[in-house]
Image (cartoon, rainbow, N blue to C red; front, side, top):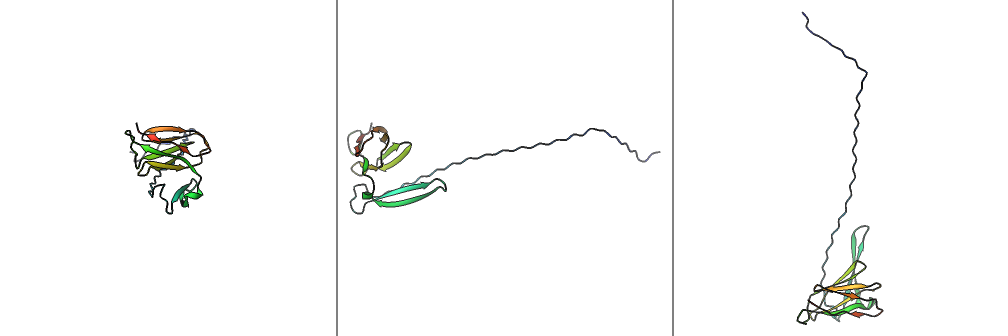
Amino acid sequence: MSIASITFKHTNKWTWTNESNTSTSSATTYTTSLNIEGPSYDYKDGIQELLVYQDTVYNTYAFILVPISSLAQPAVTGIIKNTSGQPMPNAEVVLTQNGTQFHTVSNSQGKYTIFSNISTPATVEALGVTQVIPLSEAAVTSDIQGK
């Protein structure tokens, strides 16, 4: 009668498995929105313009108030009117040049002014209407009437 049984098996075969997975992913998304309201552009007492600079390395902003007199002459001025020809107060106006947008809002008489040095053709848009602004040494007037 046997109490235990032992069996030995010896082979010359080795199985070696090595697996490695590496992945890298990078994504960056930035969204910034800022609305600042102040007196209309024709407010004469102590008028200031707010310049905003964005630091693209640290994603910070600098805000600087400067007198209008220290800026370039107005690039584009005009009056925004509705389909009936009445001035449109608080209408958003966007000047686009080389992919950069400059925003302003018309005053109570529908008047607007955008300060910028226009060095390439640009467009002005308001009330769904877009107008091409030609290169010019002087300020351009661009009156827009809604559709």
